[in-house]
Image (cartoon, rainbow, N blue to C red; front, side, top):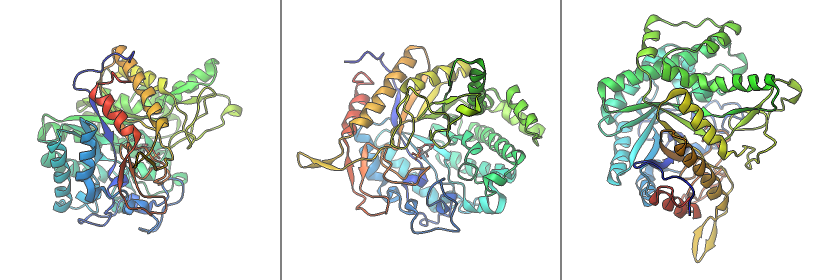
Length: 471
Ligand code: BG6
């Protein structure tokens, strides 16, 4: 029996994915290439010249052909929401065309039909690490101001086509990650070590303006739509009580918090402007940019949460760990996953409280989960995975969500990352599994693509059915 306070009525329980990590069909339906088609090994190794057969994302888990079956499985768990992204290069194959690709649009009509059939509320990410490759190669991605116009056109097409059936929209997945992974997150072809601070922060600015512009367009075209930003949340704790460590942690935290501050308050905070000044960056900001940021702030704040990190002012102690896509000083109190990501359920309550205190906007946890190696076994003649470790991870995190709700935080919903196994973003592996549903495909691309329910499948169904009382 649970000690957790009841989750609010209508709480949006569900799961999350991204197009490039599930769909496959990378060259079908008129789709153009995206940056993911030249990232066969994720962010760890240099990009390829073009598409290569070793890229698991070319087929991924074949959601493009199996979406109906997969959404039916989500419905069986009782999902109230399903987060997926729209592959930009399915809609605008190169990114800079005047007219969209009808075949791409029709695919997402069919996905939405299935969601509707099962009463599942879609949660749509407009841009999730899949910028059309042409925009990366010809424009250097978001460094170029032209991207704002291309994105606006793309967003307008989506709101016009789907706005009557999609309420919840996210503008950019983990928008703050462009600082760390400029190619994956911002389609910026210039190698990171050659990218100037001016170009990087200008790219950030363009994305922020584009996010505000999309919000403006949504209000015109689909007035009932709710538009949120999406931030990679990774609280930084001081490694010691030394005040310099406390300040160092605050400074690191603000590299992420700045993105919420701007999306919620509509202007750059002073500490951010100071950082730019000290880096010698002079942003090109027009009056129109300023007005857009100010007038079209977000309806809610969404975020991913996997890890917390520590921070210190002492360079000798700055041993950087692996945590998430970018490092951080390891926390001696925490255990790590098989991929070195430190597991910190209380950190989720910390983040929820911090964000709520700071922004007073409804919060949506749109990614959380454990990447682990799973073993398919037979139990009573049924093939499954006994993933007690995943159940423990999710249970512990959800208990903390319950605590935050009891603290008075307004939490709209919770979607676990990779509700069905998919190709990982940072390492492009299938063996790093997050799902309630096992997909038979390995890191070499071998397997039947059959789906099997893991033990966590029934566990999550029970959590949803009891609105958290079973936690
Ligand atoms: C987030 C991304 O950073 O973390 C997802 O939004 C990603 O796309 C997820 O898959 C987990 O990371 P990884 O590298 O384990 O896939």
